[in-house]
Image (cartoon, rainbow, N blue to C red; front, top):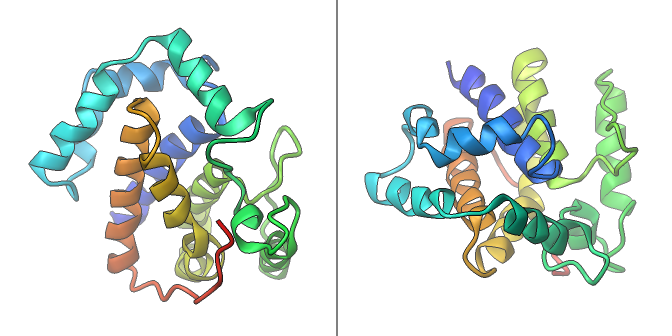
Amino acid sequence: MEMTLISNLGRILGSLFYSAPTSKQNLPLLSFFKLGDWQADCVFLSRETTQQIQEYFSEFELEQLEEEYQRLFIGPHALAVAPWGSVYLDKEEVIFGDSLLAMRTFLQENGIEFTSDNHEPEDHFGLMLMLSAYLAEQYPDKLAFFWGEHFLTWGYRFLTLLQAQPKSFYVGLAILTEQFLLHYHRQLSVVVAEVQLYR
């Protein structure tokens, strides 16, 4: 049951972080969240937190959401919240850093093939949620290690920075995702490696 929920939510949340809100896979998800249909699967949330998140999800215009997605994650200006792990874990704050290479080694050593459509670095936050979903389905015994060594080392910092942004759908998404990760972090007894963060 736990792995099924991790798989379902990982795929949904990952898509919302990774792809534009106007993408064909995200448009129905936006309606799903705006109408509150998501709440039934999120039993790990308190009623108060659920209401707080729903306020963020209920008030958005698609055009504004697209602009916010561009500002936060795409550019062209300096990104408000960089979505790649190596930006947080590499002293030079660059993409394709050593932490990404370590993650690729983990995938290769375990025979896990995972590539993005856009040749994006695999340590994009949204992709790592989708990879978590895949691991929960296919390699559940590898998920806790992946989270502890490669994802939660920087993922909470990303979500903290996102929650500090002006009120938007993505702030609600960050709160929901943080609560999701914290819950299963505890459930799976994940031990998070101690690392230095540069953001």
